[in-house]
Amino acid sequence: MASSHYRVSPFVVILATTSAVFAAQCACSEAFSLKSLPAEKVRFGLSTSTSLYASLVGADDDKTSEAPSAPVSRAKGERRRRSSSNRVDVHSDGSDAGKTETSSGPKGDRSLGPRGGRRSRRGSSFSRSSTSASGRDASSSPTVARKRAPHQFDHTKEEARPFVDALAKIRTQDPNEEAPALELTGSSSTEGKYIEDPHFSFMSLDEIFPGLDFSMKFANSKEFRTSLRSAIREDIFDTTPMYHKMSEKARKMLLLPDSSLQGSWRCNGGNWARAEDNNGSDKSDNCRMKKLTLALRSHLGPNAPLGDEFMDKIGSLCGSKPQTHWIDIVGVLDRRIPHSWHTDTGNCPNGDTRTVLLAFPPEDGYDGVGVYSHLIKLKREQWAPEGHTPNEPVLFGRMEEVGEEYIVRPRFCMGRELIMYRDIDVLHSSPDVAYRSSLMRFM
Image: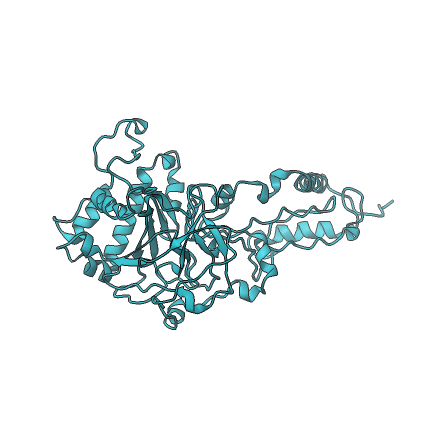
């Protein structure tokens, strides 16, 4: 006599049982919650197009806001599917660039493609029976709503990813470098004395390395800027002990031009080493920035500075007690993002410690905004509050109540390759619309 129901194959039983166990683990175990992982592991594991490492040591222009919520527990027997709509995209740089996002878009028919036939057959085997392998009615399983990233409650999907023509947008923006200073109220930071000196200043590469036409060649040769930036990144990566145990694949990813990278700028007397130098205990020579030296001499001639001299001279602009921290920031491009105001440390040892930014414009002969971080001048010094973790950023949020008249968008052009400021004199943020190749920060 024919059976009144379809026979369930062993494969289906195994698959359903495995899925149920996995779903139960996801619901009960903290190990499956991204929120329970250290932020740096979330970034390193999930971001490939932007900073994979930028937040391991220090904070860049872009501050991470919130981690995604823990996965929602699912009904017993329900299959757990991974979808591109739940992908987490972490941006380094910056800025609200560090915010978590859910990404959604058109999805093709999963039954199509080389394995479509098998997927279709597998799907039909499940549809033949209204009863799952666990004996429960599949149709009775409640629908679980997908959790949204925290920022999605603030605006619509269209507002969450407002792609823009960056060049067209920045042409409408005013540098506003003569903006008035802001009297900051209601802040948890400690106010210091009134600021009388200029809040920021520019410097050219010609002033630091005269007689080489450095500024002109830097401003008008993308090839030079690219080779200079790549050489700095490779030399710092190869001489930073923390990177030595990484695979060649990880090295290539971290050195991609759209990935932020960090380390120390100090060469003479710095704590750098090469992997081949007896595990860093015995330096084979005193030259750290070998590739940078070759790049400088290739474009500036035999009188060009050594790579070590280039880094140490720019680093010396940081003052008498620098951190020696260096980071190459990319940030969010081709998108408008909200400002996220902060100071990097809220500190200024000896009163003369400065942040120095070396700008890499996106095109030859560029003259405009979008390269440097945006600034708000302060009337009074803002020191980190008592008990604040040293070398951690002091966050001020979006400060949407502050009018445009206070926001400075520093202008880049030839002769303005560097900008300097004390961290207690200004608040800064990634540009709301960035237009740059990168920005190197020396502290």
